[in-house]
Length: 347
View 1 (tube, rainbow, N blue to C red):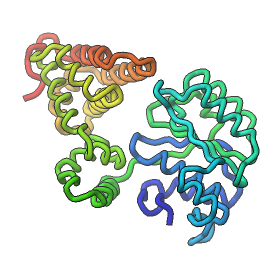
View 2 (view 1 turned 90 degrees about the horizontal axis):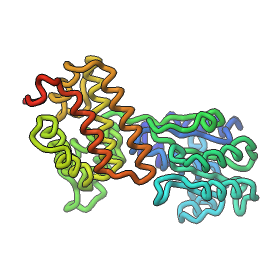
View 3 (view 1 turned 135 degrees about the vertical axis):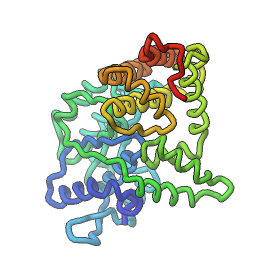
View 4 (view 1 turned 45 degrees about the vertical axis):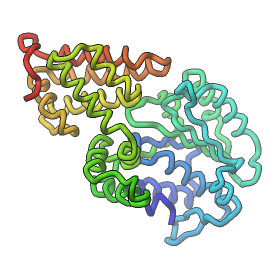
């Protein structure tokens, strides 16, 4: 049984689609794999690559092939040294660069070295710079029968329409709370007892990760929950006028650009939910967000989300975390009612 079927039941439907398309010889030459951060998109793509390269797929159920795990191809993949599987991912620039895509193009037109097929994974396709995206289009427009491209995209991060239109799309969904809890508990049980996070930390990490289990594991075994609490407290105090914007921004600088923008984005999304009469995902921010939702039109939340997207684009060019956090904090402060700017947003 594959890791997908055993450990990622939320991805089972997407996996079944690939199995059936492979059996019926309808697998696309390019597949765009979409999903939230931490749901296992990269592992899913790697498992698809293993299936496509396997010499002797097995069928425990009719029409549902799985990698055998025993052949030469599976062995090379397990060792991370298969010459007919390539992975291209953002490097120090936070972008997939044009020279990486040119290498992919050369790989695509070359003959397979040891397998009957070739697979290239682009992790992440939403971080192709413009030159890389244009170079990739040439490969997508001239598909070859012995190569499959697997493009991984994080939800909410745009891919050029010209690229999207040349791929078939599949979504890896966020698991249910029960599935996420079960996966996280199983993963944590594999850790040495002294390194296992407390149940309270696990529960909070799942909330912060929006039930994305792999991201929750990263949070639970790292420093993020504590750092997030400090950033949120600085945010709350700034909104109440108790600390300066510079002091608040420093706490977001500590957690880094990606985490800072993710927090601002999640709070803005929660603000939109409150404005529509829904429940926020972050219970600790609930009172403040409900207060702001009562005192602002719904479009203000969407304006904040757009500002986060602008900051994310700026981050590609090594923008300052402190500067972007300051800009976003000031945008949030503009939501405070003018006549109540010095009053508490929360009790």
